[in-house]
Length: 225
Ligand code: CA
Figure 1: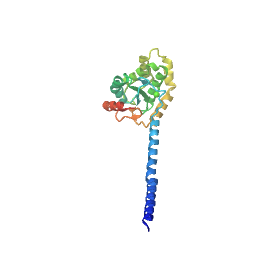
Figure 2: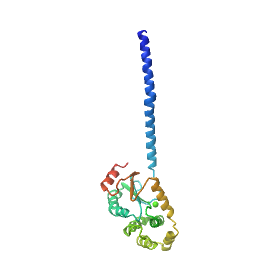
Figure 3: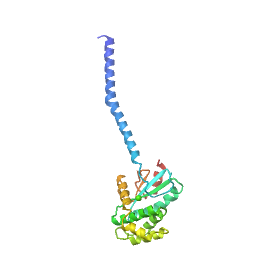
Figure 4: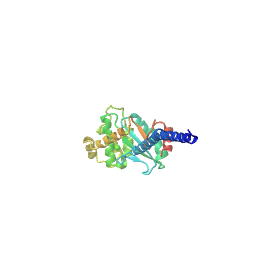
């Protein structure tokens, strides 16, 4: 075999090896890249959370969005309301950096649903006073599942926080469970986002490990995009 024939055979073999490498190594790698990019697109789409019907404090255009999922009977939600939320309001909501939402996540039974129903009623009929009602309801919280959530107590809280409250309309709303549908849709939202306990926080869609660790919250807020 002449030298030039040997070279041609060598070149053909090298080209064949290059073809095999491209087909079996490069292509799967490219495919993986495509999958990764689809996955990240999905993740960012999942972060679009429907919050149109939810109460919030803060500026509409705030860059960071925090969602609390809470239950009015849950003692840790009361603790969050009293120890952490005021700090967040002072440090981040007041200066327009954070927009803070509350969404019901009923985990402690029918009394919690009743309390959630009352809060939804106030939000839909007297939106200006929602946060006053919400705060006062946590302030009067009793031990969980001891029957402290009654129409009488909810009326007392509403009368204290909502000027010109229509007492009969309020009680009708509680009796007829008019606003339970909003509590149910809140619960479904929590479920769809994998929320398993209260209080739970999402900062721009990302779950916070410990809502009581203020330093972690600050870090998460600063790094949120
Ligand atoms: Ca709600």
